[in-house]
Image (cartoon, rainbow, N blue to C red):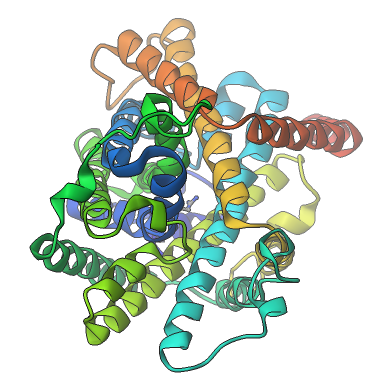
Length: 467
Ligand SMILES: NC(=[NH2+])NCCC[C@H](N)C(=O)O
């Protein structure tokens, strides 16, 4: 569980609460960012992205993703420092554009959070099964993967979501220390992989660096590099969690951007290194597996290390899924308070002060998704949903510079107009690189959201505003 700031805010629903301790410094923010960010993207999706889209050029895909997030990160920093109710994209949209756009974005954020949690859970299941196999244990095939992947239900994926949900219904105050330790463990594992792998590299596997396009957009070639970037964009999702903690840092104008860009830079460097090592150890065509890092280590015939790495991956995936589930609870909390969702979602348990009912509903939904949908479909849906939210954040920065030029901005994006426009453009390019199916799924998701708004939110926000 990474962001204590968010927890504190949830525990005292009056947002902008003066009681929030301003205790976080830049390194603490960087740790929050890394805790929320490093997970299934690097441990799982790198495999398919290299095998199906980018080949060895996957490291370049990560560079592209990192640059796009850099523009967006600066925009987040400006909004986080400016709108003290810094919650999430939902809160910014609600404050700047009104109820309907806020609902659309809030609904879109379900992709970025609940669906991300489901994606990570499927990745967790892959590593857990791979670890169990090292000890001769295996699940019946029907319980090992989703229907689209040849099973009936992915039981470990659904199970981990339910376990984490149970955790989230409890008090989570001392979470930050634990988070710090887990982040260190996660990074140590990645560095160990990069270090050991670097010694055994077979550079000839990097040639050709950009494999020739196989005749369809996105299958290798430069379009494959961009599709790879759009798919592994998932790996960057979560760095913006730092923005939610801006209200708790000592000097937000300095620390928020350092925290955002710092955690982004560190994760980008780690990702590029992992992608390079991975594709230098295993022919990219063979990486189409649920546990690519483990597969690479298996080749080195170091069984001890393989087990350590798998455990490390499981730890990393657990924190990533936990923060995503937690963040979803918090977004629904804000939306329910505005009347866009039933009051159940902002009910806080008097004893644990956690939004218990809401976490349970979210947990059941997410567990079902994790049990039934294959990881590539989920990951791409998360990427497109997040890219949409990110481009909106850049747009809001631009709109507010027009409409509210005098509002105090403790942090200002340098060269705001070009930066925000570049942010929007890079998000759009990545979205455009995703398969048509993903666009259709996004459209269906948004239509369902609009129907719910018409049937529920529209009437209830009016009531709340009138009362
Ligand atoms: N707040 C979130 N949406 N968290 C999910 C983050 C997913 C993370 N980037 C990963 O690769 O596992």
